[in-house]
Length: 318
Image 1: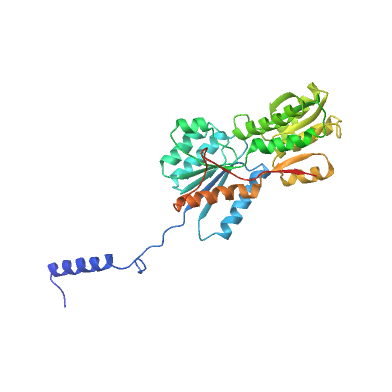
Image 2: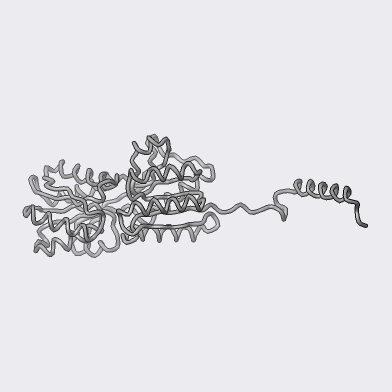
């Protein structure tokens, strides 16, 4: 039987009302989408960040039902402009969380504010954003990572045992505008000052092998009495080892680093590198992802009074 037009309208209304009353488990209910987490790292030419990415991908594979992962990196440690573009792309893609190792502690803050304002949960890893700049933007971004100053101090203290008061050393710093570079330099200086060892030069190697090599070569030439070179990361330490060998000072100038990447392990074993610090690269991003997922779920995250969730860092020697 064909209903008149008014009757058909009534039937449609009744059906719509019945559908609205169906329980969530009905065939009409949609399954909520898994949160999309964007991991934005620094240079993927650096083994540390490749290890970080591998750890994040392995974790996502184990928890594939819980979230989707999008990972990105930049071409080198100073490519801040490209990292800003990547974050802007993630905002347009409407990711639910952004876990970022910023290339620059200050320059990245404005685009991170854009992400926060867009409702994205942002977690800062590896290199802490400048707290004063973050505060000036009226945003709060938890930092999940190690105490870089403490880690560098552990390495410096171990080196100091091999030197004597009055010895000269040089520090090869990471990108000078990053807080982790500054913190590691401060930790190295803490240890040298306590042992009355003289820091004759601090220069940036931009976290990179070749730049670390160039800076170390220059220091060894300018300060022929240097007894040790302290590198802010292991990539630079690899370059420093080559510079020491080229200067004919292998065994005379001690080298230390930071990160415990695979490339440094043979050098630790044979003594070309005295010590490094392990901040567990494979877990760095995972710690950040776990924190982001907790916040998305509405769980409480204790970041202390200073917004820092501290992760482990350990001294590694031969």
